Length: 179
Image (cartoon, rainbow, N blue to C red; front, side, top):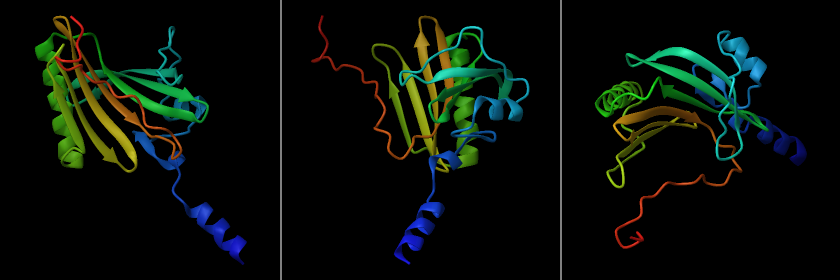
């Protein structure tokens, strides 16, 4: 009897695999399943790789979000789909990148409410992050200055229940810097 109860609890426990990352793409999907969901997605000529070893298996160009054009990258690890990253096309000027960042943040605030966390760092370069927890997945909007240009990403990821915390970028304080 106890075994049946434990089995029942295990079968009904929430799993990372049920977490929708972006537009019907769920954690753990295979590349074939993602491509079936997004027929225009293709393997990239030169795939990107995340710090955890996940590899970009598919790329989907020309996706509209908050009035801007993004390219969507699907990253796969040993458990299948691990992360979906939307990158603003090109490297727009800082003002244009910030406008795209704020448009996406505004869209997410309208849909999801107040963000879970946010950060704005100015040194040694401007970096902004706004993050929501949506149905067990993390949605993070990221902006960074790169010279006169900028990078804007919208990152959708789910972490397996047993995953260690991810790396955190920190800017050195004046006392920590070596001049």
